Length: 381
Image (cartoon, rainbow, N blue to C red; front, side, top):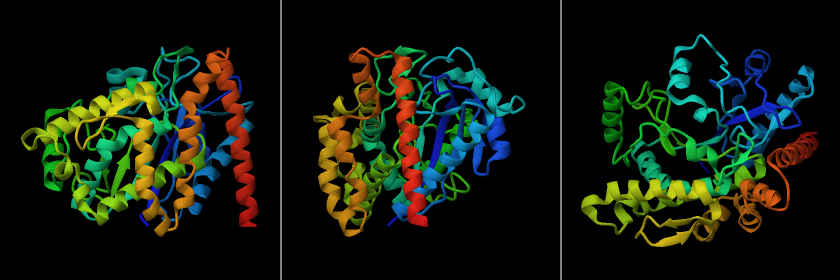
């Protein structure tokens, strides 16, 4: 099994659904939390582990501690979703006013970056294997967005997109190629830094990117950045299990590399795959599991839900062989009942409004996390 770790961005606020920022206090008083440029969300990172059982503890424990800390500040809680659902998108609420990089972000992007998401990191030590994995995950990233979509609201309105976050998020630089090798990635990054299209090596905001201790030279993991904030840790682990199993397939069969196995014209394949994937990301942000996408192998149309079902069947045997198929299984529930955005939009169709739907989601998420924390404490005991 590969190592996996998560970067979790999450909003704080009131049980009534108002998003309120406390990141400066949280970072000062709780270990393991870091600031985002806007104070209304905060981030924690799990250490990399192979075992999903350990990862579940690492996902739940900091959130449980954060909830307890927020109660010491007043009647505050954690807010699910990936956008400023109930309002506040008209202003930036700086967490670190003296930070010049945050100055740049606020002035360049405004509140389009004040989103909450999950970044999934998977350890891959060999740089060329990592680049191959980045290519495959890049062209399939829209499927992970479709599974995780959780931002159908923005500023108290239904936006028409299942992932309003990815619909507005400023992917930077605007055009990112499929990196054909580690050397290609190094050359491209150095060029972007010279051109100023990237302010630093972290300023590569695409669906997936290589990551490591000294980018772009020393790399050790793939970072999937496209997912919305997944409130249910069990669902998040299922999404991660699909990602890990897919990477394991690629390691066993390097021919899965899209640059090798796609039948799109060889002379323009790399550019065609980028254009196809960008269009698929847009479609998945709009309609998530019901989106009509085009398959990277041949450009044929396929519904996101059906494509995920195919990958589920393909990866089942390797996940079973490696002993983590039980963590893959919750995907079936998402495919059957819908992701968070779809469930929230169904509640709107049944007569709810944005605030009442978010209030219900806040209650359900808190109840679910409390039950998980209780179960984990019993297991530990």
